Amino acid sequence: MTDEPERLTKLTMELRRGLLIMAVLEALAQPHYGYSLRRFLQERGLEVDEGTLYPLLRRLESQDLLSSEWQLQEGRKRRVYRLSDTGDSARVAMTEEWQNLNQALKNIKEATQ
Image (cartoon, rainbow, N blue to C red; front, side, top):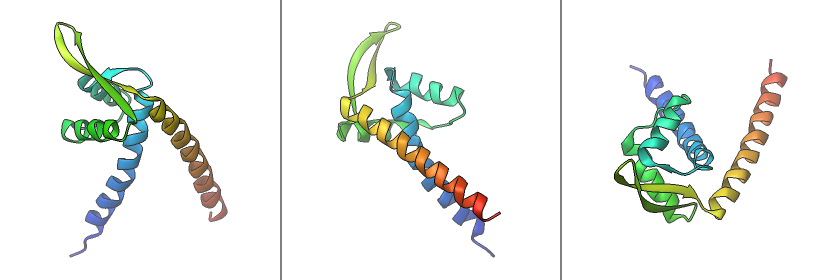
Protein backbone atom coordinates (compact mmCIF):
# COMPACT_ATOMS: atom_id res chain seq x y z
CA MET A 1 0.00 0.00 0.00
CA THR A 2 1.37 3.41 -0.93
CA ASP A 3 1.03 6.64 1.00
CA GLU A 4 1.42 8.75 -2.16
CA PRO A 5 -2.11 10.26 -2.05
CA GLU A 6 -1.60 11.19 1.62
CA ARG A 7 1.76 12.79 0.84
CA LEU A 8 0.25 14.78 -2.03
CA THR A 9 -2.60 15.91 0.22
CA LYS A 10 -0.12 17.16 2.84
CA LEU A 11 1.92 19.03 0.23
CA THR A 12 -1.19 20.60 -1.24
CA MET A 13 -2.41 21.66 2.20
CA GLU A 14 0.96 23.25 2.97
CA LEU A 15 0.84 25.26 -0.25
CA ARG A 16 -2.77 26.23 0.38
CA ARG A 17 -2.05 27.52 3.91
CA GLY A 18 0.37 30.16 2.67
CA LEU A 19 -1.89 31.18 -0.18
CA LEU A 20 -4.86 31.45 2.16
CA ILE A 21 -3.02 34.07 4.21
CA MET A 22 -2.31 36.04 1.04
CA ALA A 23 -5.92 35.72 -0.11
CA VAL A 24 -7.31 36.90 3.25
CA LEU A 25 -4.95 39.89 3.35
CA GLU A 26 -5.87 40.78 -0.23
CA ALA A 27 -9.60 40.42 0.42
CA LEU A 28 -9.37 42.55 3.54
CA ALA A 29 -8.19 45.52 1.50
CA GLN A 30 -11.90 46.21 2.06
CA PRO A 31 -13.47 45.50 5.48
CA HIS A 32 -15.40 42.27 5.97
CA TYR A 33 -16.99 40.38 8.80
CA GLY A 34 -16.19 36.68 8.97
CA TYR A 35 -19.11 35.30 6.99
CA SER A 36 -18.93 37.98 4.29
CA LEU A 37 -15.19 37.29 3.91
CA ARG A 38 -15.81 33.57 3.62
CA ARG A 39 -18.51 34.16 1.00
CA PHE A 40 -16.28 36.66 -0.87
CA LEU A 41 -13.47 34.09 -1.08
CA GLN A 42 -15.85 31.29 -2.04
CA GLU A 43 -17.40 33.33 -4.86
CA ARG A 44 -13.91 33.74 -6.27
CA GLY A 45 -13.08 30.04 -6.17
CA LEU A 46 -11.44 29.66 -2.75
CA GLU A 47 -13.39 27.41 -0.38
CA VAL A 48 -12.52 27.98 3.29
CA ASP A 49 -14.33 26.35 6.17
CA GLU A 50 -15.16 28.29 9.33
CA GLY A 51 -12.85 26.11 11.42
CA THR A 52 -9.94 27.37 9.33
CA LEU A 53 -10.96 30.98 8.67
CA TYR A 54 -11.84 32.21 12.16
CA PRO A 55 -8.66 30.94 13.85
CA LEU A 56 -6.66 32.45 10.98
CA LEU A 57 -8.35 35.83 11.47
CA ARG A 58 -7.59 35.74 15.20
CA ARG A 59 -3.96 34.78 14.52
CA LEU A 60 -3.48 37.53 11.94
CA GLU A 61 -5.00 40.03 14.35
CA SER A 62 -2.67 38.87 17.15
CA GLN A 63 0.22 39.46 14.72
CA ASP A 64 -1.03 43.05 14.21
CA LEU A 65 -1.80 42.40 10.54
CA LEU A 66 -5.52 43.01 11.07
CA SER A 67 -7.69 45.03 13.36
CA SER A 68 -11.30 44.38 14.21
CA GLU A 69 -14.23 46.06 15.86
CA TRP A 70 -17.81 45.18 16.62
CA GLN A 71 -20.33 46.93 14.38
CA LEU A 72 -24.06 46.73 13.98
CA GLN A 73 -24.74 45.45 10.45
CA GLU A 74 -28.02 44.17 9.04
CA GLY A 75 -29.51 44.35 12.54
CA ARG A 76 -26.79 42.17 14.10
CA LYS A 77 -23.52 42.83 15.88
CA ARG A 78 -20.66 41.56 13.76
CA ARG A 79 -16.90 41.67 14.18
CA VAL A 80 -15.57 43.57 11.19
CA TYR A 81 -11.97 42.94 10.15
CA ARG A 82 -9.72 45.30 8.22
CA LEU A 83 -6.05 45.45 7.31
CA SER A 84 -3.77 47.35 9.63
CA ASP A 85 -0.96 49.43 8.13
CA THR A 86 1.38 46.53 8.95
CA GLY A 87 -1.03 44.12 7.25
CA ASP A 88 -1.19 46.28 4.16
CA SER A 89 2.62 46.40 3.97
CA ALA A 90 2.72 42.61 4.40
CA ARG A 91 0.11 42.21 1.66
CA VAL A 92 2.17 44.26 -0.78
CA ALA A 93 5.42 42.47 0.11
CA MET A 94 3.84 39.01 -0.08
CA THR A 95 2.25 39.77 -3.45
CA GLU A 96 5.59 40.93 -4.82
CA GLU A 97 7.31 37.82 -3.48
CA TRP A 98 4.56 35.60 -4.94
CA GLN A 99 5.01 37.21 -8.36
CA ASN A 100 8.79 36.71 -8.19
CA LEU A 101 8.42 33.08 -7.14
CA ASN A 102 5.79 32.46 -9.79
CA GLN A 103 8.10 33.88 -12.47
CA ALA A 104 11.04 31.82 -11.19
CA LEU A 105 8.92 28.65 -11.30
CA LYS A 106 7.83 29.50 -14.84
CA ASN A 107 11.49 29.99 -15.85
CA ILE A 108 12.47 26.67 -14.25
CA LYS A 109 9.61 24.88 -15.96
CA GLU A 110 10.52 26.34 -19.35
CA ALA A 111 14.17 25.32 -18.89
CA THR A 112 13.25 21.71 -18.11
CA GLN A 113 10.81 21.11 -20.94
